[in-house]
Image 1 (spheres, rainbow over the protein chains, first blue to last red):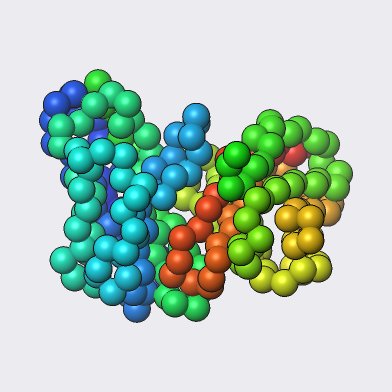
Image 2 (image 1 turned 30 degrees about the vertical axis):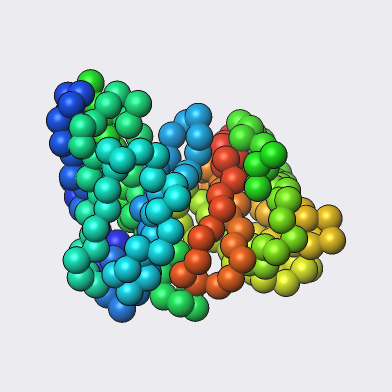
Length: 112
Length: 112
């Protein structure tokens, strides 16, 4: 199994630009999670989906953040407009109802 | 008060030492307890998973849960330089596809 796939692995952008992060969950996993990790705040859950439906988006910091899951094998996290304080590592994770979460390698985002 | 408290360290010990990593939590509704290991510039990977009080052993690793004290521990015996990583505790209210709350992570270095 290829595991959770995230792209891009690194992203450098300028403040105000739109950023789109992508995730392909493990085949057969019907839950998908987006996290953000910083030194100051640790690993924070942003949003999670069950069967492509957003269940809890209470961790999404602002309206500038949005996430979609159009089908079982693809999800996006979009930041528009991006700000320097959005710089972090963004992780996607997936799971089945009876297993715990498996994480992707992360996307390192730097907003200048 | 944070839902999960974990000493961020850093913790540095000599090779072969026994390592003890700990987390406390505040909500007695949490029923599932996990330890993740995260190597530098990688995603967290599941190390141990338990849902009952007591000890669970896997090779050199032992996870301990004390629900009455809301305290969880991870012990590493005969520590190796390859164990150098950040260790995150994670707790959840149900198995699988539910929210996990992560500790801050403890950065561990094993010195040869």
